[in-house]
Image (cartoon, rainbow, N blue to C red; front, side, top):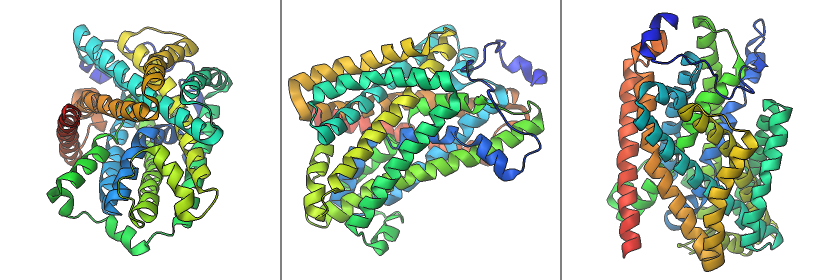
Length: 445
């Protein structure tokens, strides 16, 4: 893109995630499926953010209160995510910049610094949800007190450091294994709960009732507003560059094609997980008249007795633990990408992770010590609100950059993609503003 160099003010001399940049060679003469396998992986790291513990309470509440009706909202929010993540990977492949580096290049220093601060707060909030989710799972599975469970989650720094030294494929393999664990657990839960197939199919069809019923609309907006994780957009634009593809037009076009297939497939799996949580909730709780189940601990306690299956609750908690630990892996990378991209400051990954972990653990320990289980649930909700606040500050620059001919050259968004992307960006912003307003009104009352 030398002919388009005027679009960027700075030379992008330091690659994103330099220790693993272009470390996985793509065989030029390989067939379709071999290349697809070589590109597979980054999409699953991104998909982790769409099935983290922060989404669980909303999906449980949606199923227990409104049966299968809000499955359509999960599907729509997932389609939005697929579009935005495809733009993110395209930005990384075409420009050789991750979203954080692109923001530093495009905006003034004060604006870039402000965006960095907002993004760091969002990553800390996301980390907070993962800390709490893992602590709850450890408490449910092994009876470990919540406050100790929160502290134990800090030890994953050692695992991150070990895996990064072994190579990026090891991180991807572990993430995929944990996602498979979550999928297997919920696949079994669906078999145990015996949902109505006709009801599920009908649930994927949007209805006017979602808009006309204020309470249903509130939960629907919670699903939509908290589905796309802002740090995922920074993460994806970086980790697609771990593949060593040809840096010409044909090579980039091929990389975009295979990376998009990887991302779409992984996000469809995330759709299955989120839909499965709602389906199990509807088939178990709604069917038997438990219409106010929103807390993870309550769902755990009710699952086995209501289903009459001894291991149902254990499988639920195991999936939660896998979800929480999986999310911490991607949080490490996102934190490193954001700090290096916005500030051009390099820090050892283990130190960066430790700092992020402490920022999440300190409030979690304080609230857990003071308020116990109810406090952690409120903290989980707060973390999602903070994520909602940050989201538009990642989405709007992404759509702006990928729609700019000077920055993207031949890979600029087509007109219909531009229109669709801006519509999605505005919808997400409006939903998050509305969700924040309703959340604060609820707190005040």
